[in-house]
Image (tube, rainbow, N blue to C red; front, side):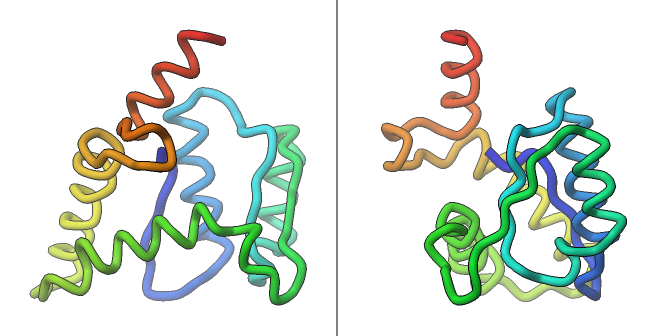
Length: 132
């Protein structure tokens, strides 16, 4: 389930900090592990400090190891093929609104995923939290 996300014209540490903080706000707690690639935005001092302040373990892929990030890469592939490449956006606001709808309404709540037993991400999270 996508719980934190952000969009910007540039890839900065503010972008990932905003996404992480959105996830914290929605979930009410930090994840145990934050896995990322080796981008400078994830290695920044401010982002590392945020993870440390929330007792989140930072995990980074080794150079050239795309498998560690397979879940995220799969999501971004779906976002691009199912939403972005199919549409022309008149403005950045139109793009943001469409991507918001894709993530928050379609992907999390309606799109069934074979990797989680053909449940939606929201159904899977509810099931896991009910059992825990």
